[in-house]
Image (tube, rainbow, N blue to C red):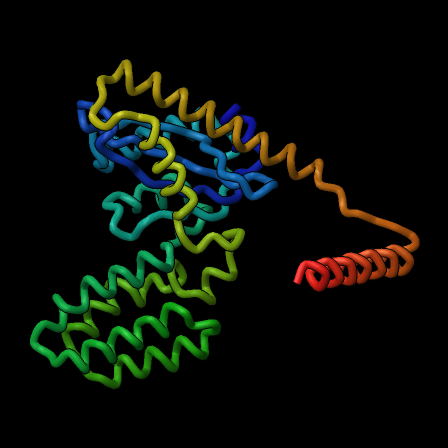
Length: 271
């Protein structure tokens, strides 16, 4: 089923790892696609020893071997702090990696106090404001203007840090660059995080592997049933149509007026 779904909706692939589910503390890697109704579809689950380049590379090789549609992946979305995201770039050479906007802003808030510890709080807030404007730049011209503002502050160490870590990959996190890609309005990995939370609500933390797999299957089946129910409900919704709408509206207004009048008379008699 996962192969069939991925074969139909392979343009966007969201990836992340979740932890603390088995007693061996092995990361559970989840690969997620978005189907035609906008619903989440888990297309692969991997348990790996570590998030090393070798393990992640072997995981992706296995995924590609069992999913011929991997060549159709246009966009990969994950976190910048994922140590081996470079492996995804190597294994999916034709796809574009995107960093969720929320994560970029959160990283800025975490890094600025460390990179600008000797500067005043007012200057730190100014830098953060410019970085936020950079992230939300809706055009290349807007980005260049905000970039010039950042450079004009002449903070040498921070300028070097930004150019090395962020400016060179602006196509992965700046708004106008992301709008050029097939992200289906997904600027975050919230879909995957919600999916992980649902799994964690069923799977007992640090459970034995046998129990872990049992709960994992229950979680997957339950999620699929709820998704199918929403799809069926969607098809059952039919808009109300009538050829004599004006007559119906007049009748409704008449009934409402009669109800209001009788209600007022009743209250008057009781008083």
